[in-house]
Image 1 (cartoon, rainbow, N blue to C red):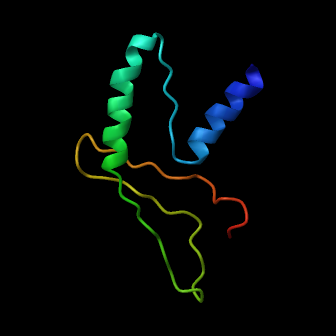
Image 2: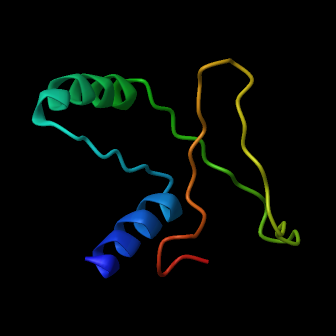
Length: 81
């Protein structure tokens, strides 16, 4: 059980996702509506740079509109550099 929780916690934070724990099945319909709303209002932002430049050590993404959230992977998918 501990390993399962570690995988779920690390997996969601490293991929820019999140984990919601519902205490009752009555909460499922509202959470599904919220999820559908989030999925239909997503944007994909691609960061690019010329190959000749030195890559940055880190960069930061943020939003200025109250109530909005920016989520991002903290690691590249395997096989990417």
